[in-house]
Length: 229
Image (tube, rainbow, N blue to C red; front, side, top):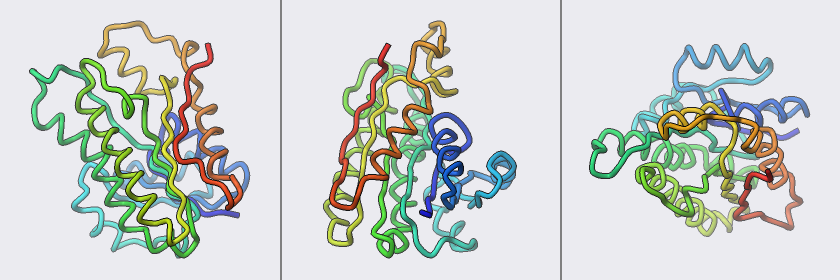
C-alpha cells in the first residue's frame, strides 16, 4: 500500500486519480487551498487525509505545512492542480501572469522542496501533470504556456538532481481533457463545449498510474496523451 500526496484532487484529472487510488486501497493525503475545501475533499473521499496550503501563495506554504502533520514517507507527489486565464500579451495585467506562475510553477516547486525528505526516504516518484501548452505555445495562451514550459524545466532539473536519491520524475502532457477547466477555456475562446470530443479525465488518470506503477528498473520521463477521436 503506497502513500501519495495529491494536489488538485477536487475536480478533473486530480479527482479521477484520487478515486482510482482510493479504490485500490492506497493512503492519500490531499492538499486543499483552505479549510472549507479540505472539508469538502474529506467528505467526497472518505479515508483520505487533508493538508491545508494554498499554491497561490508559495511563500506561505512552509509556514502552513509546518503547523500540520505530514506523512513520514511519500511514495509519490502528484502535481495536478492548475489554473488558466487566456488573453493576449498586449492586454494581460501582471496579476494574471503572477497568479498562473504561482499556482502552476512556483507553488509546485516549493511544495516539492518541502516534502523532498519524505520522497527521498521512500525513493518516491514526482509526477507533474503538464499540458500540451507546455510543449507548444499559441495565441492567447502566453502566461499559461509560460508556466507549463517552466514546469517542464522544473521536472527535468529535479530528475537530474534527485537521481542519486532514487526519485523518479515524470511529466505528463495531456491534450484537451473533459474537465471543468476545459469548459472554462471554451467559454473564454467563445466556442461550444462538448466533453465527448475530448479525453476523459479517467483515461488520463489511468495513464498517470501506469507510469507510477512501473517496476523500479524503469522510468517514464515524458508522457504525451492526445484525444483518440
